Structure formats: structure tokens, C-alpha cells
Image 1: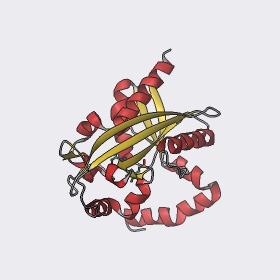
Image 2: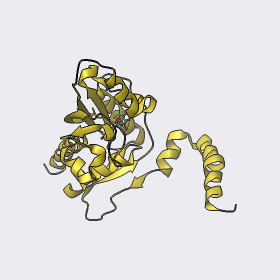
Image 3: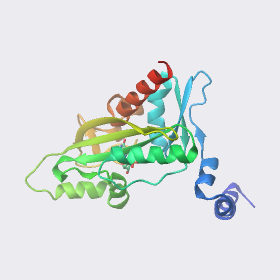
Image 4: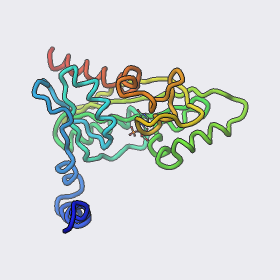
Length: 232
Ligand code: IMP
């Protein structure tokens, strides 16, 4: 083994698949990819956030950490229900994972609803992003003649669940506009084409996005509920 790259390739191609065969996929990922993002002893509470998206973790932590709740990322993945309501997707994911990992946790699911496209892509935002992406969305909107309606809404749902409990959901929305072209270097997903007052999410820093975003609102609601429950 000559360098780190070779070692990495050896682990991912040879070791990981064998361990995965031995333990089962979910087990391997929950062991290897659990990351503590806010390692602060002053933090009074912690909650596991099951997501593979680091951007979501950073945004959620910026809301929860000042309230004393550390976000612990677990990247083990979960089956996403195909449903036209993101709240049901989040509720299902939270319940499935809480029973599988046998602990309290949250998941979060986001939909993007573009008015002139009758709410498309809505709950299928991830699939559409992966297939046609931002350029595809912009092209679709260019093809709509006779309307300059660029309004769009992000809907974020945090799903919380404990083993053998019915899931609870917390919703945050933000309405803005779809830009005419991609702008900005930051963020992820649809951030380069979603703008508020002419500024895309991708052009904002994390703090500015968290001032207005759908995710900030859903996590604020979750944090408020969680703290009330911990301190009745
Ligand atoms: P999901 O919640 O990860 O399923 O997100 C659905 C799709 O929306 C994915 O393609 C994400 O990249 C995208 N997405 C989720 N949240 C945001 C956001 O805050 N800004 C931009 N795109 C997002």
C-alpha cells in the first residue's frame, strides 16, 4: 500500500463490502458513519438526526445548539416512502428508524412546490433534482409561455419518533421565487435557483439562510416542543 488513496480504495472496495455482507447494510453504516457534529459538553440535550446530508445537519445545529440541543448525525439511511405529502414521508421515516435503532430520533424531508408548475416537483424534489437538476427546472419554466409567475415554496418537515410511539411532525415553509439562472456558490440542491428579495439561498451565508429558511422554522418548532417536553 503506497499511499492514503490506495488505503482508502482498499477499505471501500475490499474491506467494507465484506463487513457489510457479514453485518448487513444498515448495521455497517450506522456504525461507521455516525458523527457528533456539536461536541460540546455544555450542551444539555442531544438528538440523533438521521440524514446523509451534512448541509442539513449544519443548518439544524445552528438552530438547535444555541438552545442546548446537540445534533448527532447518523448517516445510516432509511427507506423513503413515495407519497404526495412530505409530512407522511417524514413521519414514516422517523417511525421506521426509531424502531430500527431503538431510540428517539428525528429525520427531515423537504419538498419544493413551484406555483406555475402546479406544485411540481413537490415531494419528488430529490428525484427531480437527481434527474433534471436546476438546469432542467429552469428549462421547464422557460417553456411556459405567457406567465412570469416564478413563485415557489419550500416545505420542510421534521419527523420525531421514539420506539413504539406515534411520530410527531413539525413544519416550516418559505415562499420565494425561482431565479432566471443559477446564482451563488454556497448551499446545496435547489439553493442556486431559489431566491428571496432577489438573493438566492446559494448566495447567502448560513446565518442569512437560517434567518428565513423553511428548515430553520421547522427546527425551531421542533426545538421548542422538545425543550418543553424535557422541562415540563
Ligand atoms: P430531501 O429532503 O433530502 O429529500 O430533499 C429533496 C430535494 O430538495 C433534494 O434534492 C435536496 O437537495 C433539495 N433540498 C432540500 N432542502 C433544500 C434546501 O434547503 N435548499 C435547496 N435544496 C434543498
